Image 1: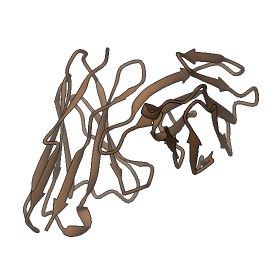
Image 2: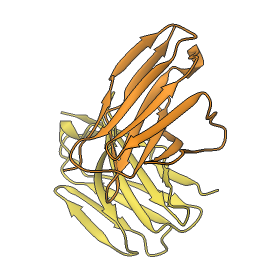
Image 3: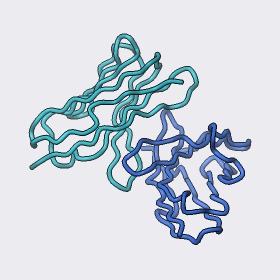
Length: 112
Length: 110
């Protein structure tokens, strides 16, 4: 199979703090990973494409200084939400590209 | 930009019934994918289609890549309670990025 994990599965933080979310491909190497955001009852919105060993490509309207992405190895990409605010509360989902995109289980972020 | 229109938005059916949902695009796609998402989880890939006219099955699921390359449908036969969830179509065009439909929420009454 193509298994992708995310950690943590849910996190609650105070406004102004930073939160790091990890995305790992467990049984394959992924040069490319993706980060999505999903609002309740809505579809997935691509935030950025993460490429191993190079800078991430951000979608229009996504602040790269706020959503820091690091893809330091072929099995790990991280998303850091810096200076989080309540409006950053959302469901964040990563995917790793093998033949197709395989998704992680998601991370529920709640910013108080 | 490319847009996907997925319908219906939601369905409430009786166990054992067949289900059909579809997606249409404003432009041509090279790949059509169908995912299922359970509450609080990430999407799971059900079927991938790569050629116009391609018809592919995965158990009780059948999906087709439309001849015009602008549409795809997913059928579920003999629905069961565990089919409940949100089904997303996704298309990939020349940009290489996946574009997702709005989702179809399926509820199955035992």
